[in-house]
Image (cartoon, rainbow, N blue to C red; front, side, top):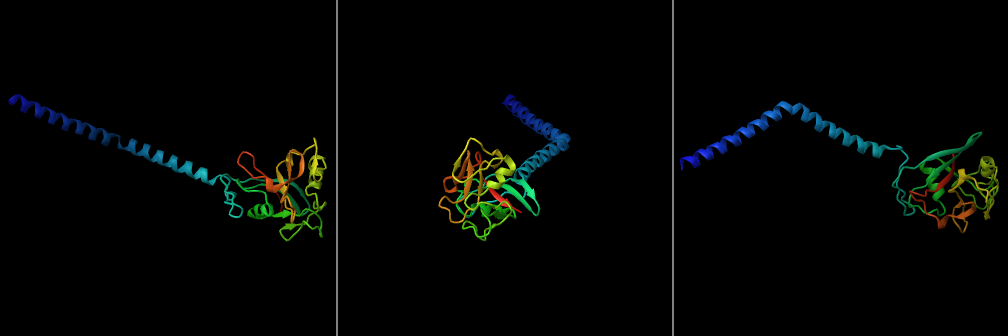
Length: 209
């Protein structure tokens, strides 16, 4: 019985000693532990903020056509002349290139769609702006392709000559059966209603500011 009592006392003393050692170690290293926890927390917060703030002001949700953006958008200036600058703006992922999608995308960036043709063109409306490059009513972006690539992209044309800078670019077209007019793989006009912008294969809106 004395041996059992001695054994119990030994276990009790060992537990107390272990707790004492742990407490002493914690107190001795509390600054290091606190610093490590704060560093980990700051790293986590920084990662979240960086991910959400990438390309600030350019990310948005498309509410109008059933598309949802899940990546930041991009704005590339293609050409500038006089009071006009012409831009290639990425369309929200999941958005079908139906009539009005180009204008909707341009307005998200404080711009407006480029009209297909000069004043009086049946494909123009108050959702676009007539510019010096609005030259051919039924064939938007023809003048732009000549300026940038020395290639005349004409309506319903399939050509081995393409303009890489304009690949995937869509122009606003009022009342066209194919919706917005695009340049896809040398085809102009590609029927916008048949194309949906994606993360791996994004499409772009032709805008002016």
